[in-house]
Image (cartoon, rainbow, N blue to C red):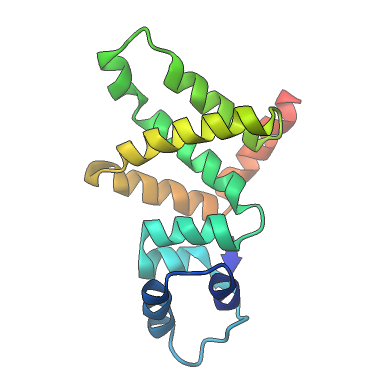
Length: 157
């Protein structure tokens, strides 16, 4: 299970208000260097704060954020294709984000794909999608998806 600490969150520049909310929910006896599962942050502070913590206060979390954004964009890609059936740009961006996360493409190409997939993922983050996104993030945080990704990455090398 992916985890961080209150100290890492503080050092990464966590929003004071949201950090305080988390700290109060955890209780005064929760140590600054005690392992804090990201699923607990998700439960207490919600999806946005958990994703921020994953990207900013977990080693390698940025790669997981990229894969998650690609999953979210792919999950709603059918909406795009309904209106623009011949436009392959979103699918290409999703593919590039995953390749970048695996270290298979350069930073410039990966950054462009990350921006495109991130925009698509943010646009997809509506009430109907939040449940799916939360469940999918929990799978990443519990490292259920990472093993699948690792196996896939090894196959593609």
